[in-house]
Image (cartoon, rainbow, N blue to C red; front, top):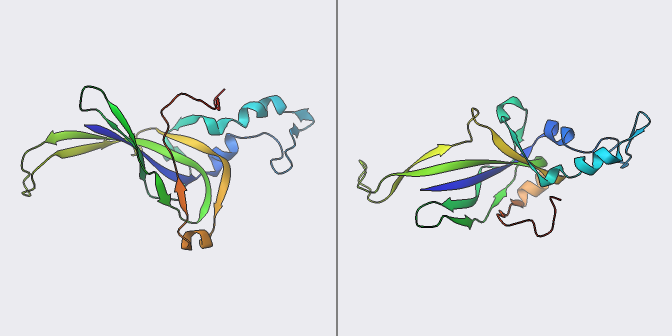
Length: 172
């Protein structure tokens, strides 16, 4: 049995604007209605370092990529192992603002000959990608405009899984 940590790139305006700086983004001005929001922005500027668990069916968003695997967690054996995957995917035109993550659990159902005549391991997948589950979203540090030229050039988005401590102290 194993679990696949899956991801896809999102255009997600509501999320991007709700979890970000207060004030004028283009001029980096912290003042709104005469009040300085620098203390609030200290935390708002760090939302790209945290995941937010959301029921995605409640929000308007656009997928800019197909689902892709960023890691596999292998449960069989004496010690579970984590295997990072390639994690790169081609994008559609749009404004990349976040990455959606979900888990697909692959459970061994048999290792005998199937009714189709194939021999070997057979797995059933239980996925948290459906609308009845909550998924996790990570905001990108900065939105990335994906143009038609980028799509034609085959530009890819890369996502690297990390299960280590926080050596760069990003989440402090």
